[in-house]
Image (cartoon, rainbow, N blue to C red; front, side, top):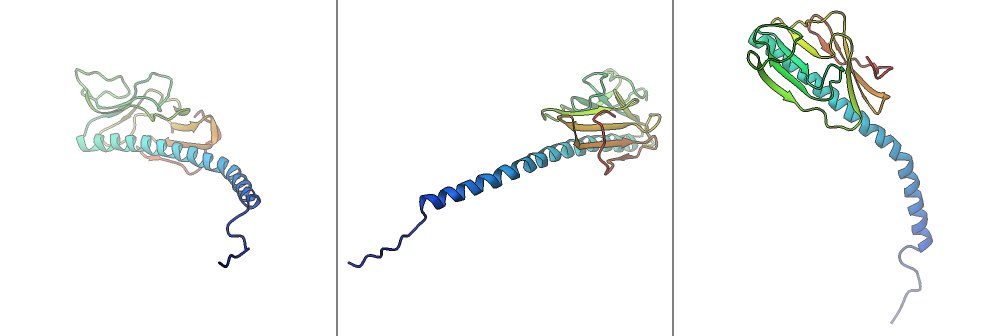
Length: 178
């Protein structure tokens, strides 16, 4: 039999070097990957809240009725928890849901994401009401800011205007409170 004395495969030293290099690359990439995940979570929640507002505005125009988003969790301005969307039976704006006269359209249970906050500025801490013509019953230009872990680097905002325009500005908020 003719055997070759050449070694086939990898030596233990070569495998250890490859493992060390892979672990170094993974440790460098992990913080960036974590930041990407957090940024995507905040963007997803921002898009979801924006969609709820657009839905309420469209329903107000289609039904020719006042439609309100209500922050069910309380008057603390936290829009990351429970939200109810309803048609106002008496055409009142910026008021609590009344089951005897109002028609509930949708209830949102929150974003289910740890350490995510969505805080509304003055005027949109408890309610956001759209009139039948799509305009908002607000004064000024209120903002809702979404942050994760208090990190403003991944923060997003939703700006509201009395005309009914809802935007997600491209600029990142400098603070997690509106």
